Image (cartoon, rainbow, N blue to C red; front, top):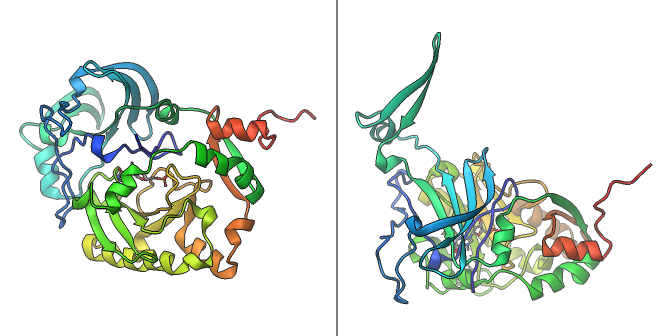
Length: 351
Ligand code: G7M
């Protein structure tokens, strides 16, 4: 029942089930927007009678990855009052452009500013912003399965060139036997969760979709990140054909319109793409601010929606013919399956 996503050094994107997530956020939300992430009370009782997860009860057992570039750490550990393991991700937030926010948070009489190095005109300080502005973005995955733990563990990567035959023989059986729960998607589509983050909705069974802010979005316009979840159940890019063009075009056009109205970001500043392989096998489209180098926008993972539409217009069965290239983590189930299928070479050839 647990679901999540990812991010990792460069390839994964992180998420956790909406019902279990802990958002620790500040007031730094997008300008001209009503959006505000919820701050949950640590002592609040959940509907099932359990108390809310509290980081002061958390014992770290292992650092899964420590990403200096992204200023993000993923740790595995246990909450004192819980049985199962948990994964906690802590990530620095981006800064606001708003002058009064900057003043209140960092250039304020309560800001502590401690010099530790001076050389000519250059000085380094430790800067402690005011409490309201020094928060981190935290994601808690509880209970975390071994797959979650593996997913956040920094591992070597390998390239797979997946033909449609390999998709049918290796990837599809893997997806069918073992993939993350899609409960969070159903919850959004059925209005059981995240209703307040729905930006746009079109309930047509064939071409309709829900546009919702991504779990990882930190509320800043610069890092704007949304997801379009169609009502049609499609596993992934591999299942798309020309019959899906009306859906994809509606997602593109209505998504762009809704984002421009709500966030004032034009189509020309949006990166709109799908992941292959995705973390969740329920087709979804990512809408991101072009200025944001979101994890998962790399060549071996992101497929621009505009290109997908053009490919399908050229050839209805394009994705049944194309070789799709992506990366797998060493020792992940897909890595093992491709290796035992003889489709993954992990050693250098000797000359
Ligand atoms: O790699 P893939 O395309 O499957 O990415 C899935 C996306 O779904 C990531 O960007 C996640 O942050 C996002 N996501 C995952 N979960 C579990 C949720 C959720 O519960 N709510 C929302 N709004 N986004 C999620």
